[in-house]
Figure 1: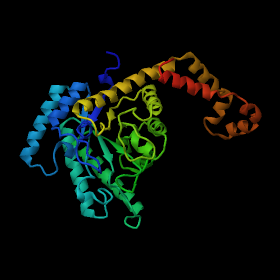
Figure 2: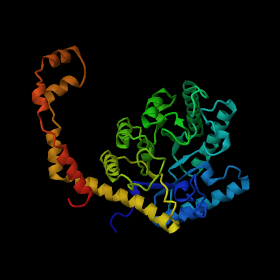
Figure 3: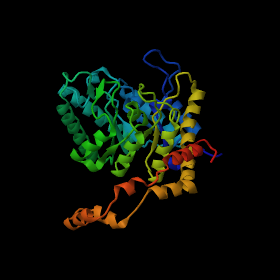
Figure 4: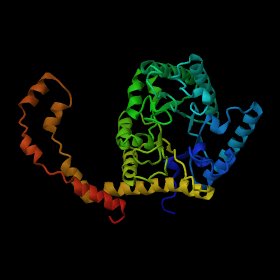
Length: 387
C-alpha cells in the first residue's frame, strides 16, 4: 500500500512515546501502562524500524538486579520477535527529586557526580542493546532565578561532564555519537542551552567535538516562536545533525508533542524536504504522544500517522522538486555570476581591489522580480493535492 513506512527511513519511537499513559499536570492516567514487551508488539504491528529509551523507561530506578535482568530478557525477546532495533539511548536526569535543581549543572558536586555515574550506567545499558547514538536533554539544567546559580559556572560544569562521558565511551569502545537536545523552557523557568545553536556553539569547546552533534526537536524551537527548519539547516550545514526528534507544536504553548504534521503541515513539509534533499541518513525519531483521549488502538493510529505523514510529505517534496514552473522560478531568482562570485569566494588584496572597482547598480539590482507569492501558492497547491 502507498505511504507504508519504509525501513530505510529508520522511523523510531521511544518507550516513553507510545507507552505514554495520558497523564498531564491536571489529570491522572487515561491508559493502563504497557510493559516493554507490549510496547515492542505495538511498534511491530505498525511497522516501525526501532525503539529508543531512557534508562528508567526500561529499568525502574529502584529495580533490583533480578528484576532488571528479567525486564532486559523480555525486552530483547520483544525486539527480536518484532524485528526492532535500538538506535538511540538516553538518561533520565530530570524526573527524580535529586535532580530538582539540575544534574550536570547542579550546585552540589555530589549530585553532579551521581548524574555522571547514572549516565555511565545508562550508557552501559544502551550499548547492551546496540545503541550508537546517545542523546542528552538537559531537562533540569536551568533556573527560575539567576540568584540561585551562576550561568557561567553551569556551562563549565556541563562541559566537564560531557568531556568525562566522552572519555568513558572511548574507554569502553562503545562508539557512541553524542547528540544534544535544546529547549528554551519547561520544566525549568529558563533552561541553559535554549536553542540548537547554543549547543552548536558549545561543541567546538569540548575535548572531543568530533563525537558530538545535536538532536533538534520540532516542538522545542517552535515553542519559542522560531523557525525549526532553519535550526536543522544550521546543524546539517555543520554536519552535526546526528539525530532528530519529529513531532508538532503550536507557537507559544507548553510542550505539546503532537503527532508529526498535526499542527503545521507547511513547516513539516519544508522539514521533510530539507532532510530528503540533503540525504539525512540518521534515525527519524517521533518524540510525540497520542492525545490523552486515545485508547491503545488509537495510539496505533497515532504512530501510523506519524510515519504515513512523513512518507506523504516525502512524495510531495519530490513533486515540488520536479515541478517545472517551481523550478523555473527558482532558476530566475537564484542569479549566479562567476565574475563576481570568484571575487567574493575568498579574500585577497587583488580580489578586494577588483570588487571595489566592479560596477554594481543598486537600482537595477533592486528592480529584479521576485515572484515569491506565486512560488508559495504553488507550494500550497502541491500540499493541498491539486498540483
